[in-house]
Image 1 (tube, one colour):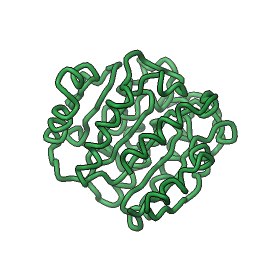
Image 2: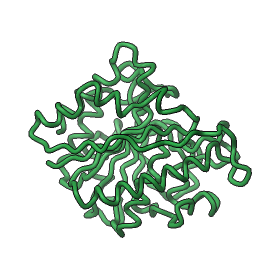
Image 3: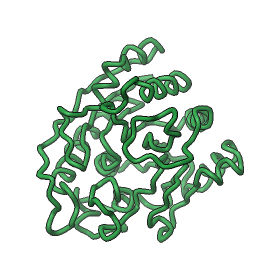
Image 4: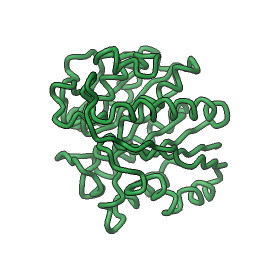
Length: 287
């Protein structure tokens, strides 16, 4: 497989890349050589340049560091548009979940319809009145699907970037406002009650067009904190190692899985590297 890797060390809370860069932590741990040892051809595109954040709320949208989020999204989109021509699998290493705006803007530019598996402990579906922080990662899924103001939804000039019928939210424990939408939501309890294989099959059939390629967004806070301690906002009852491995194995077997974004892994608090070792072990099971 031909794999491109791009780091996007943007966190909407204003954390500077020189203070925390998850993509570089993956490289330092040996991600490139690991994938190459599996027989893959790997292109490391380095990290996207991230402007300095003012750490102020935008007066119009009320979103923290909105101007930087917009600029990063446009830069990420421009970079990925070219990658989509060159690689059959893309790996984007965040940063937080707000990187999804740039990823799906690239698909919009290319007129490349895509299904999204949104694997996250939170729905990321706040509006600006319910988000206590105003951070972009509180509400990027609502922005992607057109549920916020036009200024936010169309920040790249092309929103909404994703139809509700092309999204499945998988494994959440905090619903926020997603029940106001028509998005298919499978929380962890219903997944385990009905079986991972069964609910995965149902997820695929719930897409308006199940034959489209799949992008997986993997916020690591969907995992049990005992195997993923490197998260700032853990929620109780995350997936175990075997549960998430079964899901990832199923998505890989679809032969429609063309890209992965990883978000909210915080190397600065991964003191014994338990979190990154969990992720590498999962990669070993699917790549």
